[in-house]
Length: 126
Image (tube, rainbow, N blue to C red; front, side, top):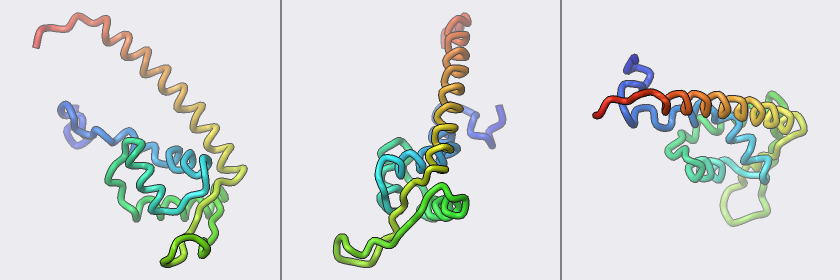
C-alpha cells in the first residue's frame, strides 16, 4: 500500500483514524459538559488523540459555531486569569452527534466483519 497514506507498516498512521473523526470527538466532549479549548485538547489526549494542534481545535470550534452546532460564552467568573471561551452543544449539534454515532456504529460492524474474515485467512509464519 502507498506509504504516503501511512499504510507502509505497523504503527504508521496510528492516530490517523481518530484524527479523521475529530468532529464527533469534539461534539461528544461538549455534549458531556460545557468546555473551553484547552480542556478539550487535554480530553482529546485522554481519548487517544495526543498532540492535537490547538489551532485545529479552535478552528473546528469556530466552524461549529458558524454551523450552529455549538454556542460559546466568555467565562470571567472562574479561576484567576484571562477570560475563557466556554463551548456548549446545541440541539443541532446533538442531532449531528447522533448521526455520527450511528455512522460509526455501522463502520464498527463493517470493520468487525472484515476482521472476522481476515482471521479466517491462512497466515504464513512470519
